[in-house]
Image (tube, rainbow, N blue to C red; front, side, top):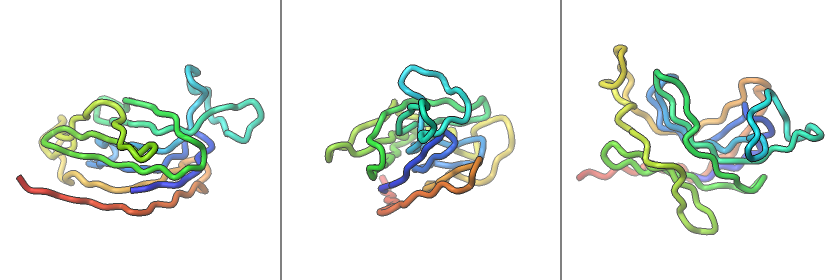
Length: 155
């Protein structure tokens, strides 16, 4: 799946998600981040003079213990990015395409956490795969997606 978007703040993101519910998901997002090595300083915008920042792919893991940023890779601004994930057994390996080469981002994540059997509470939805775009502050951010494909293979 290819995503094209121009996030200008960390609250804007678009990407690929393996979803159980709002408290259990794995996500690879095209988003904005502070300059390398700087902590998040609140709501900054790329267009704000002196704000700096960069466009990144952020790999996020969420479960009932909280949200963790697993990996961050800087990507060129305004360039479409092809994202994907391969699930084998309980391993979910996210990747992106750079210069025509599939490149892993982060380590394998535990896909089994996105199941009815994981966690301390009763859960019923089952795991899903999809695309998403979010902008909880302005509700104005958009993203274009092309080529989404889901392929399931049996053993």
